[in-house]
Length: 493
Image 1 (cartoon, helix red, strand yellow):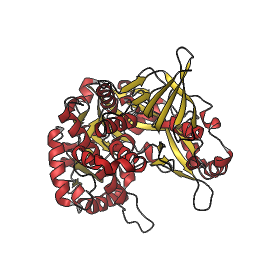
Image 2: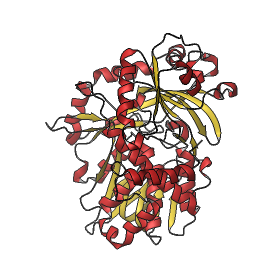
Image 3: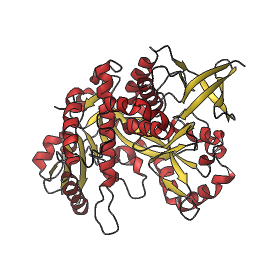
Image 4: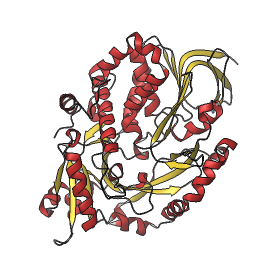
C-alpha cells in the first residue's frame, strides 16, 4: 500500500476538525493537512444543523449550567466559563469573516434572543436568584428579568398565548443570543481549507488501524468505503475529532491515557414545525428546566432555527437510549467499546444510572400525542398536525474512573492527549460545537507547545484578541471585544 506523509491527520469532518485545521493553517501555512471523513460529505453527523440545537451555547439560557448546591444556592462558575469560551468562538469567526475564510455572517449565524422560562413558585425563585447572581457579573450584565405577563408576552408571544393571568411565570432574556448553523459553518471552513495546496480531504474513508512508530509518528490505515481498498497515512500528529466515533479510535491508538474511558450513548429526537405562519410567531430560543431524572442534554427548549437559510421551529430534544455511537453507526458500537480497563467503570455507571436508562427508554416509546403534550408546556396552542418527528444526532457521554477507581458519568467534554503530544481526542458532547475555538486552542497548547514559542502565540492573538487573558476577570477587555464581535457578526438588533 502506498503511504502518504502528512504533518497533521484530522479524523472526522465536523466542526472540531475544521476549526483545528483552520487554526493550524493560519499558524503555519506550510503544514500538510489531511482530513478523513467516513461519510460522503463533511458535517453530516453531530455538526449537521438538524443534529444539534444550534444554540450558540453561552450560558445565557441553559439552566443546567447553573445548578443549585445542597444549600440551595445557584452556582454560576460553569456558566461564566462557557460564556467566556463562546466569546472565543465569536472572535475567531469575526477574524475569519474579515479574512474571507468565512462568508457573510448570516450564512452561518443569526441573532436570536436567548430566553429562560419557568413556572411555579419554586422555579421562579430559582430563576430570580440565578438572574441576580449572573447579572451582577460583567459577562451577563445585559440579562433582563421579568415576571410581568405583558413583558413576557412581548418577549415570546407564542409561548404566552392562552396562559392565565394568575399563573406564576418568570423569564430572563439576552437580546443578542445567537442561532448557529454549525453544518454551514463547517462546510465553509472546509471549503476554505480546500483552496490550499497543502490540504487534502478524503471522503468515504474510515480509520481501520492506528500504530505509533518508534520515531513517534503514526501509521494510520484508512479504508475506502466505496472501493474497499486501503491506504496508509504517515502523520506527525493525529486529532480524533470524530464525535461519538472518537472513543473507539482512541482505544485503537492504545495510548496509556485512553485507559479506563467508556461511553454512554444517548440518541435524540425533535418535533419540527415548518408552517410559515407558526414560525413567524416565535423568534427566540426558549429554554426551560429538565424533567427530574432527565440528562442535561435533554433540557427542553423551543427554538427558532435557520438551517441552510430556511427558518423552522424545533422543540425537544427527546432523549433516548441507543447502542450506536454515531447516527450512521452500528448497533454493536457500545459492546465493541468494552475493554478490561473500562469494564468496572462501565458496570458501575450502569448499576447507578438505572433510573436514567429507564427514562431514556421511556422517551423513545412516547407517542406523538405525548410528545406534543410536552410541547404544549411551552406552546399551549400547538397543533399536533403541524409538527413532525425528526432524528437528532447521537451523543456519547463520558464514562471514566472516579476517585475510588469505580465509574462516573460526565456530561461535559474532555480532551485526552498522549503524553508526547502526537495524538489527541475530544470526548463528550456539551457544550460541544459552540466552544470549538477554545477547545482546539487547548489542543494546540497541549500538543504544540514548542511551536507556541515560535511566534504562534502572536498569531493566535491576531485571530483571538483575548488570547492569553481572562474575559471572566477583565471587564474592560470583555466590553471592547463583545462590542466588536456583535457588530461584525450582525448579532445586535
